Image (cartoon, rainbow, N blue to C red; front, top):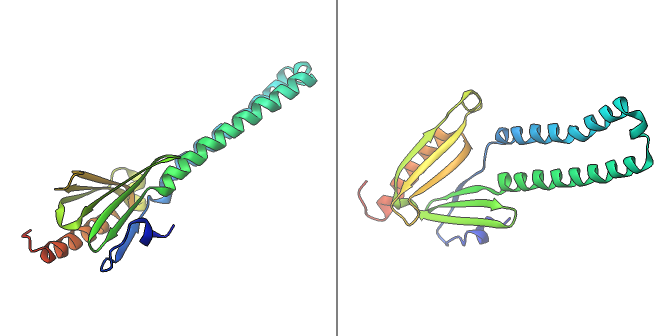
Length: 180
């Protein structure tokens, strides 16, 4: 994806940082997918051991393969949908704007932006053992724009990112001749 054309970058604008969710936050989805993917195999194994006469029937075998295939196709579709929303959620910080790109579902996207000088408050939160150990958390940005609140979910190093946003907002406010 070409970010310059995607955000309609101004001539003086420079992309300072693009932020995505921490990869570790997708691990629960992978584990859930792995558990759900093993269910048909376990069910077939149990049927084979408990009811070998039924499992040996050709019609039952064909139906099991058909329903198993439908199950795996649905599971792959849901996994792909979750991965798409995880991967395509993005926050772009330039020297002039903050842009929030949220992938709502497979075919729905929301793009919001605010000028940095409209940022009023930036809060970073790290909650939980894994978030503390692996340094990821949420950042809440309060603004004076049409969208009053932006939330960056599961970002790497949230405290450093909060400070970067505050520094850029202070610089942009100086440029726009506003007091902090």
